[in-house]
Image 1: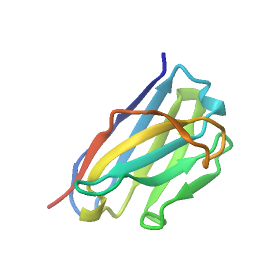
Image 2: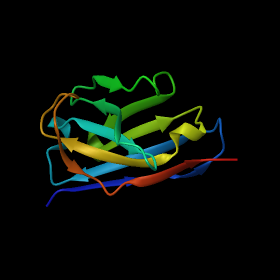
Image 3: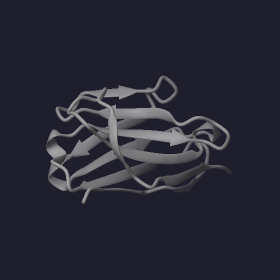
Length: 120
């Protein structure tokens, strides 16, 4: 059984930082690309960042230079380090395990999401 579980969300002040974690089980993690999406109230879900099995990455323009995606294959975990957060980053953040090993692969499994709220 495949499980994708996010953690690390919460309330943070504007300009602050937060690190999300996502642990996946039931897959060959080291061969699987992973992604992070977010969905804000009233908005469509959007890709935030993705990382291939070899470490190549892709970011949404809105987060480039502020967010960093990384992975630890020994821990079956992918991270999203978020810096310089602003109110527009408020959303539910979802982690995905993809079908293939490249960051452009289709998403196969989804986590339940973790809420990130940026507010003073």
